Length: 158
Length: 412
Image (cartoon, each protein chain N blue to C red):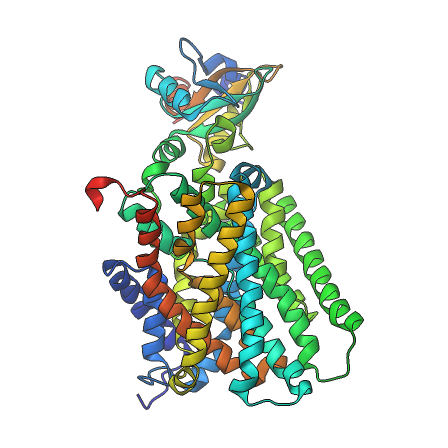
């Protein structure tokens, strides 16, 4: 095994992740749609919002396009009203808080996971960013594609 | 057209012309489904004679595909967490409008059909008129939410009637399938012609429904379990389609109700899954258009002008009875749930549109060997009423929201 290969294989997610700073993109399961949107506007994280329960544990993720779709539900502009079936109507009409629109089977990384796992998840599942949690399932940061690209360049993996 | 170009050509033609007919319908402010059905009617062996009769006989497999997907997606709208949120008015109005329309239709047709068929003896009434009335009655419940949605969208309507209307229109299809399951079960015993008693009349259908429920629950659990560890979209689609088609086939083989089985599979999945997007939206995204275009064009092609002409009086009766049932049910459900009179006095106008699922139910009926004697009549009756409901529905939906004062001013 070459040195730099051994070197990069030993790297942990916490060594490369972006740590959450001010206005982290984290909301409570009962937070209202409007408040989530306010947070997104203020926050510098612009891809997804992480949803946590009363104990602050990660339980879901909301992608920003989903959020926008629900914000505009009164307009019905995003659903094709002439499609053969529009089964999503009820979902849209009655979604008011974070847990109504979040995706529950959120893919996450533990801060001690190897970087390799992050790369594998991104490639296999087509993910653009993955939240990173600690032992208590609290979100401490995230890994996104530019972070991985930087890592690849730094370790001359090209 | 004299030459038979083979099934593949006609499937291609149905998809191709269906697409343009759907677009045209959109332009004319009708749901796409109307365009598909009308294209099918024109191509049918009974009008322009483009589709050969042999092809029509072979094309039923497309209907099975489509029906299992439509019912699965209807089941997918029954997430418990959503139902809890719908609130009393929507739940009450849905229950009452769907069931009153069903019962009123069964009663009305049971009274009229003996004269229409010229049956006289009590035996004939029980073996012919009553089963016919039951089958047709079950088709009174569903409402097409897309036509309603299109109108609401166009006029930018907002308010409590608009919300209730959409909720009711999107929920009553499930009740329609349950009614259909019960009706088919009882009708099958009745047409059997054998002597029967009350025990037999309910035992048979109860066993059928239990069987369908069991197959649906097993399929739903299996799907949920398998798809947990599958992430590639293509693989998820294969597993969903595979499981649904098998469940549909098994229930058919057991002579139970495959539509109920696939709907129940949808209900189980939506309530257990942590990712509804993966389990439902992928299918809608990739498969809905192709399968539905084919399905509705072929359903439309089942029209037989001669049968429809004979059934015109029944078409009128169906439209009137359904409307009366919806009005009465909305009134009762609205009163009991305590909504403002503005809502229960106007909402039923918005429940007229009817499309996709009833055509599916009619097609499912036509395919059952025990109902062969009145199958063409059921199919043509439903095609006739669907045409009327889709043409008039949007106008009445607009009237409902206008009368309730929920059309924004500048859009009038």
